[in-house]
Length: 382
Image 1 (cartoon, rainbow, N blue to C red):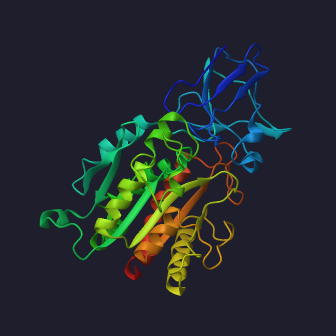
Image 2 (image 1 turned 180 degrees about the vertical axis):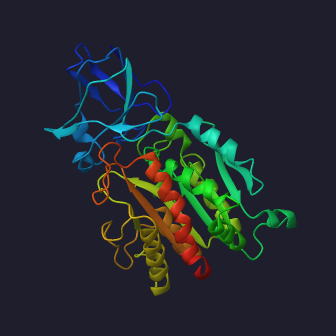
């Protein structure tokens, strides 16, 4: 039996693995950080053997509430991921599974490796509606890719922004929230579908600035929440630097040059078993118009996709209590616009459960595609 995590996005430390029925593991912390919760590893040489893996440092994870009623995912081919029996007891996260092949992968959620990201970007750039812009390099010298999407007619004029709304969408500020990348695989292909009436109508009215992965370094390193320097990017928006948080520095600088009419920041939540949105209720410029657009976006998404709901989520900040280091709060206040955080679960959805796969890549993609319907509902009022 061999346990290995030395691959893109891998994370585990082996404490002992002499017996498949008593495998003891630790999750490695993010570099220069105390955060940890993301895991992703392969166990080989265990065909048809009952395996009992115990993550013995689970009690120190960033969000221990995330372990309650949680089931890990497993895969033989790294394409189809299914849930396996998992428990949290006495500070230990236990995973019990009898593999049907020689090697099996286990993860906190379906991984989204940087190679898949690169292939996705390469495919999308072939569209006449797409311009690929590299905003700069990360601390690990990876490109920070952005897709600028506008109608073909805009490209012919040579001015993609003239008279258009400026829509900014990004994912994976927290690299362990891989559901955000899967969401992009639903959102972007539909936006580029020339036969989709909603997408065509949106591109007549808006230009999209999309960063599918804000944190490629943390993604490659197998981090939960931070980049290569140990910075939590979603707490860097007031004072980003090229030395600590170049990803935010570069995107914020471009926002200042172009302007923002709407921003959607795509995340995953460890604890809550729901899809939901969070607004910018506590910022100084919060008003009834922003509240109305926030609610209209959410209700439109709920109508088009029952996996999304508006009843459960984070409590709203009271006036003046918003954390201005966070992306949507900073953007909404700086540009006097609507900015929304979309959260998806690591667990299954309580109201619309899928026992085999739980909340899954395919369901993330569907929700991403339906976000265009919600945007269409509010585009004229932005």
